[in-house]
Length: 128
Image (cartoon, rainbow, N blue to C red; front, top):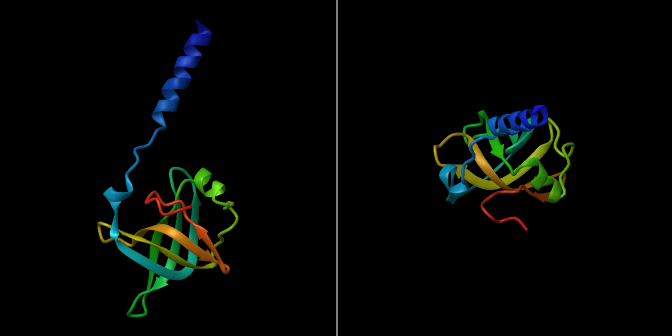
């Protein structure tokens, strides 16, 4: 009985941490490709998506912080990334798609980092 209770508890706890997930088309607009360049201010290497935060100068010269959604950690490892590839202060150029809500959020297709173009695991299906 104790073994059965432990298994049941494990299943219940495992179900509690499952997060809702969104489709690409629900949050991002495939008709709005976009590119940014700037300095990385923060890296979040967590599930369900990795996020980079990048300071970008807008057309008026003001610095705006953009959130950049990438694939999940396992997906990026399969694409050749490690959690140490991007560091705060690194200069990056990112191609991707804008968020539908007009926020400073984009989904990354690829990232140019140190002269190396890396695919970002977009669920848009444009990665190798």
